Length: 180
Image (cartoon, rainbow, N blue to C red):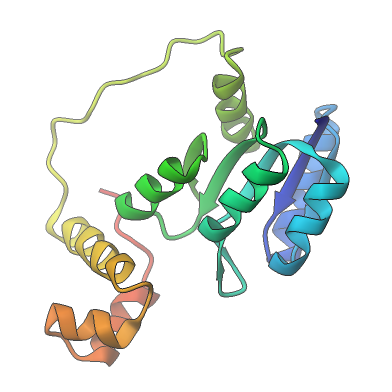
């Protein structure tokens, strides 16, 4: 295992920014923007850390987690997404990711997640849960994400299960999730 971080994100600009940010902090990094290249690059580099986008040009980053862990069982994977949901967070952790972070995210938060996974986090972990209930909009978003996951991402099947028109569901999915 090398002390290198593999950055997997189809947004070439964001990918390059993350690679530069890691390298400025003295952490070697390499970016990949195509999901089809991830396994080959991982075999070549045998990375210690992987920053993995949840959606890589239509390919679910969740499908790459088992492959990456098979190639390098000791690597730590942090999943990033612009469309965070509890359902995908649970799936990512169950598959072996060490952390699931919502974009936009600071580089220090990503590094903190890796430090926590390595057991080198000097700070106390805040394990408090908010006593404030989720908003109705957020509950709707979480429910839609759960049903979508149950139907393997099939929009039509999800719309039928939710008794909703497919176009209405597509409009709801196109919006960013409510934060609380």
